[in-house]
Image (cartoon, rainbow, N blue to C red; front, side, top):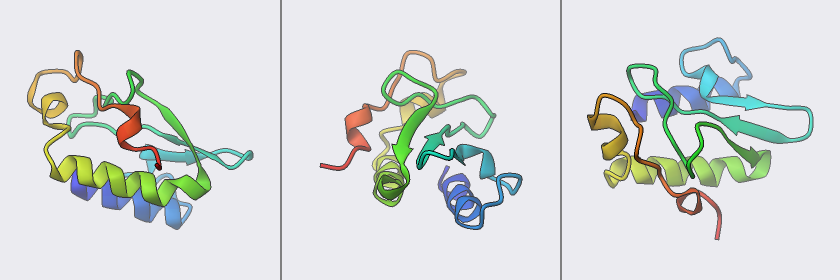
Length: 98
């Protein structure tokens, strides 16, 4: 997961959505970014009960840092260990700036 996160950050920073990991982050013309992380098997992760969350571009670095911290803390393990991520959701508040 950490490798995919780092690839997504690099792809977004370089504006290369086709690069490995590039599909996790997609910006629109209004300054918002869709965040759609996936498990290693390609299934979408769930955050705040949703497979896609939206963030302002300025919130992105802090949100990605919080997502990385959640990975390191094992908070996503319930979504990663089963056959599907169904039934588990990382609270949206975990990634929002405070």
